[in-house]
Length: 213
Image (cartoon, rainbow, N blue to C red; front, top):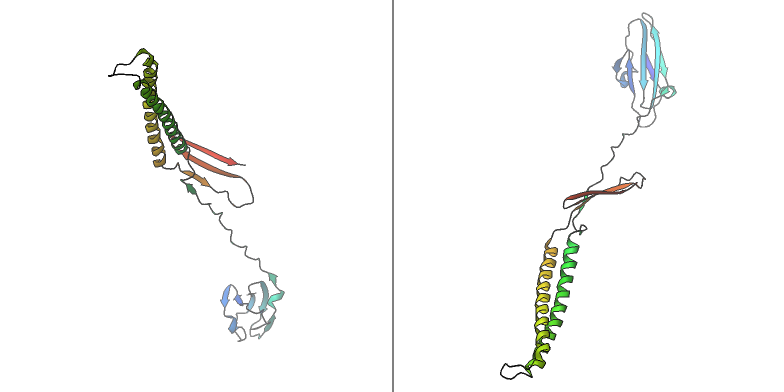
């Protein structure tokens, strides 16, 4: 039994089975012995499959011409399905200023206000004191200086409070500068053409979700 196979497309590889047994394609032109009876040969070039049923009588010498390209088209292997990529998680420690901002702006703002109040009232206190002393003799002051002395003491007290407030505000502002940023963990939306997205915001003692759908 011999097989004459038509020329294959460039780059194609011929695979042959006879009665479900693999056969080297190079040996097809060499006569081979087959038992008398019915047989099935299958030829494949990677794109087409040709199936031939034939029968051999005892002592018969037969040759079959095979055109594989006239066979059935083999189903194309679908491309592998890509697993959806998980978008990376982005952690932004600089964007979370929910606690730092009040400490920084509030603290230094309070310090500035305390400095202005303390400086103005301190100047007024010294001015009233100087005015009263100019009328006093041997630390004895006439009644006309009592108003100046009272104003001087009041302004001195307010000035001291103002400078104390300035100190507290400065401390609060410095603490705000030293506080770490509140981490903001966000997941970018997958690139599927949809505009939906969500972000998880984690803060001190709170967790929130912000998104658009």
